[in-house]
Image (cartoon, rainbow, N blue to C red):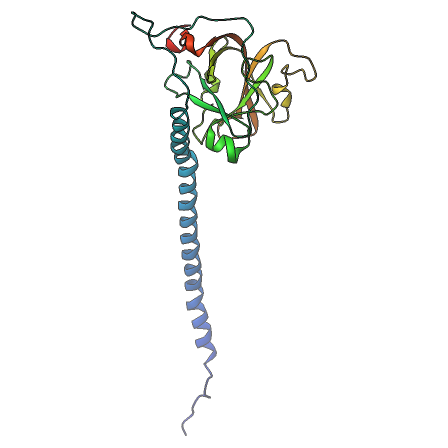
Length: 261
């Protein structure tokens, strides 16, 4: 008599063997998928870093250079009649002209730092928010702080990394270094007096009298603020300076921009 197995039934030892054979395959398949996901994630992270740390600088430098190049400002005289070489502006230390505070995101000045040799002239615009000023226009002016040349604190912010990084070399500044600000008609030459690292909560660094909120200002101060350390927003790097002199643009160019002290 011939014995047949019931339809659909598999001997117990066959089911066990199949489970044993299929188990490692499932694990290897899952590991393979996980590996592919990790590789894809790594590529995306790398692409983001390239964009954030390199391409935003390319775009930022290009945009800021275009802003400066397209300024409708008259250039300073390059040579006196019958002479060769640049015209050096005579320093003035009387009451300087001070412009009114502009509307948000309006570019009203430029900044140059001779210590940062090779760095371009950077635009300065009203406001310090990232989307409309710092990420797209370069250096921002804290609203309601002093304007260039005024008694009080002309306070500025800028990126130290990414988006053109206008304040990338801020830690190189030394006491006495010039910081040259230009508006349409006037040069303002400030001198560095101090630097410090503070927390983001130490907002009194941009007070009219830095570090002394509520105290009536008596000096014409400039303050540069940026993130610290590099690639972090944990702290702020601060540089203070005071106005040395001013000069009309029609009188020439400050000696500091021509290789003078």
